[in-house]
Length: 394
Image 1 (cartoon, rainbow, N blue to C red):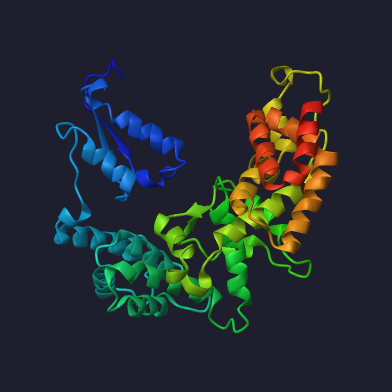
Image 2: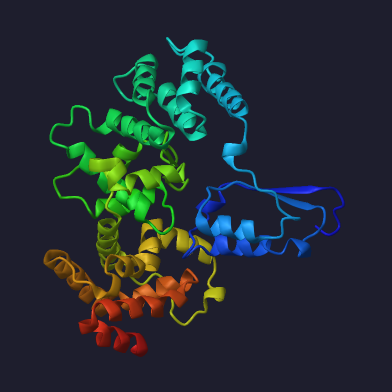
């Protein structure tokens, strides 16, 4: 970069989504880099967008004002934002379609732009919902539903009403027993509580362990209806994650999502069980010899790809993290869940722990082993000595 004389602009979009204030390594690294502008090349500039979270605001507001310019959304002229949103909606609903969406015209686009109240996220989700409406609705019918749900609503509640309408159209209508809503929450719990985004195959495999034997649906049956809210639901190798942080915030706040709320604490308990179950069922010796160093194994990446599928890799790396959050400070579990976890842990300790260490080794993640055992020792003191003994013996 030092040899480049022309101006360079680096765009960092949604800095607030790079981890969080307490446990966001990427976020902390970026903030540290940006705090020393005097040490960066003079031809380098950063353009950053972010929600005004406290740590980010205080960081930039405390920096030398000669090197930084802060612009709040409230300072941007409303006419400019409205024009941009109008152009976006018209492009998405009219220009992008060779065959016209029946009933959707210029007047509809202008109405949607006004209803958005300057929120691009509302416009994005609304356009995708209208272009690809839920089963049984036409684009025009869904357009009317969305406009109706957003009319007379304050900006602070606008996205909530949009998310409620988008989810209800696929899962709440004609669901008198609430079965579809419970399935929706069960699948979204895996998506929202995972420590790293999983692809469709990974979500399906982990969620499968949490279903009842007489439940024949898959996570894909739920996720396929959420393309306007989640990335990766129509792909096989793209991680599934909320397209906007506001959707995660909505689903995890009971005062906003009510019966659709996803219990994150409960999700971590479920993912603890799922990860332990997967490891006890699928961990086995996968190398030709334990005496060969990893760097001497031919085609190690291919071996990992073939023998350590995504859901097993995830379970091996994060099961203890889920346990740690599910049981802060050793709080007692519900008796049934406590019994299930203890039973799986016992099987894991006596039959699978060496295979677990092997997988961590080939994944270059063996440094996770001792913290995981320390978490178990804290949460289940009754088995801590067994874990530590086996770890030392291995």
